[in-house]
Image 1 (cartoon, rainbow, N blue to C red):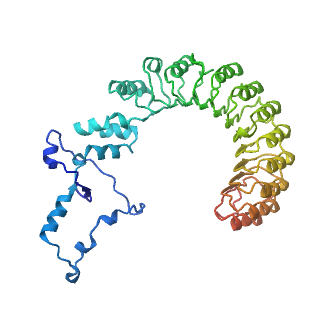
Image 2 (cartoon, helix red, strand yellow; image 1 turned 135 degrees about the horizontal axis):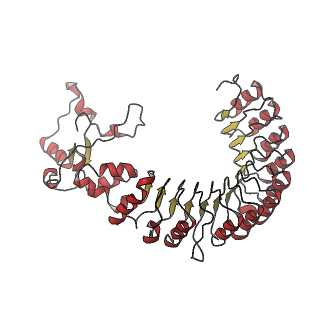
Image 3 (spheres, helix red, strand yellow; image 1 turned 30 degrees about the horizontal axis):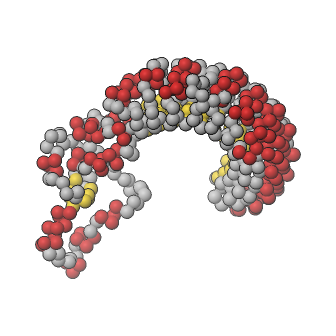
Length: 438
């Protein structure tokens, strides 16, 4: 290839490259060239510094027979088509769906390799109008049975594709913002993709339930965020056949109430992650029932902007969910120091905590400094009672802190900021004070 360094590759005992590639048209395809600031991967070890030396005293004579043997062991490849099929498959396995389609348009040989079924385990289609055509093309080449992860963002016209084709190995399906997907489509997907473990229906506004004719589904992760038509009845029907569900996300499903939380606790005993952020009808009653039933299995819990959740609900969380790793209570303005003190004592494994815009002060930070020594992320955005004294105590004891948000904290000055920078050297501090240096 003009202007590029040849790749030094070991011979596999094949015939001459010109004889081997006779049936195919040879075309030059651009290879990746690392920039000057790229990470050194050790390719310099292929260079023979002795042979490139210009000093006559440093030249070492090599026998002619040894030179011939070295030339037989190595071949210099300047064309992508001269590479072995196995090596090309390994290279193409790093390409995205769009890049594979581009490579397939270069020549006949690369077209055949790019359409090898083993390269189509993960497919991503981001053009809505081409989703059905792309799936039909994969089907004609027999690749649909090899797909394990399929991403179709904004897809349209999927009414019959999943009902007609058995995606036997599909384990993950993402249909974000596919506004034409309906309950019938979801039922067809769950009926035909029997090994499906992850389903993302974020932004599918016409979906009100995710049901199947199969008695027990193997689904482990379900994302129904921004499914504004989802109600308690549809969610209860959905969860009744998903006993293995471990992750459930219901962000901005404004119609669900405490009845949904009770159903979650009843049907999904192994649930580890739950988000009901911006679900304004959720109250302390539902949080108490959920925490009491799930207990230590819950590791991730988000009730951000659920303004009806207060100390009464989170006190039960602190008592039962002692293995909690992540808690988001941002915008729960009824939350005070009494609940956060209980969380610091009852949940010592907390790694990330968001209590922005809550009515908490330095007492919370002092409790976190002794109760949660492994805290990595903390958001105090909008906590007007937090002062420098609380930050100094937190920074001194929790030196592994990696991310801190103190935006809109008017009582935090340069003293508290400097204490965090001094003790938590790897911490990234987000703030809104122009007087703080980054």
